[in-house]
Amino acid sequence: EIVLTQSPATLSLSPGERVTLSCRASQSVSSYLAWYQQKPGQVPRLLIYDASNRAPGIPARFSGSGSGADFTLTISSLEPEDFAVYYCQQCSDSNWLTFGGGTKVEIK
Amino acid sequence: EVQLVESGGALVKPGGSLRLSCAASGFTFNTVWMSWVRQAPGQGLDWLGRIKTKTDGGTTDHAAPVKGRFTISRDDSKNMLYLQMNGLKTEDTGVYHCVTDWGRGYFGSWGQGTLVTVS
Image (cartoon, each protein chain N blue to C red):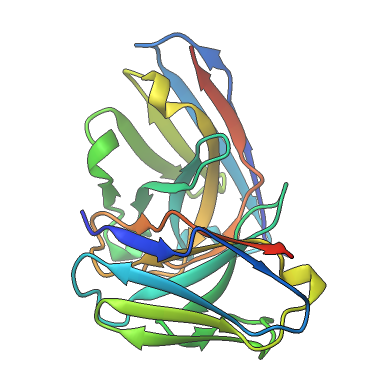
């Protein structure tokens, strides 16, 4: 099983701030990594796939980077609707896809 | 518009069985890989398994924690996805979502889910 560790568990920020979320894999996943956003009461939404490609309809303020075992999701300037939980997911081991534990971005 | 509607969730005793269904519409179902993802109450996400299209062999992959207990199937003539769950455990409690799989494991569309409680 490829274990994904997300940090920090919670971030308290204000609108307009820049956000950097981390996802570290227990082994290399190449660039087969995705990021999802989940707001309370909603289903997850795919933001980024293949580590750095934005999914259709995702605003340009969201960007992903990294390869191998270390990845980052950056939100350039937090909008009020961006307060949510963010999950990373590896798709390298196609027999057992796994998610990180999530990072909650909350309003300071 | 892609629509995925799950059904079949219920309260079941440990060791019991349940079959979940997912009705798909708004896209060409038989051309899309499909997966099931579970979310325990207040917790993170667990991928349970996928089924490929018949063109790609129609094969299934199941995550280790559910292999041998859960079985995914599809009926392309009805645009339906299924999850047969046997030997249920209390830790299987959660909301079960069917999702469209972009073929690499990226989940583009999600159903609202159906709640399974094992107690």
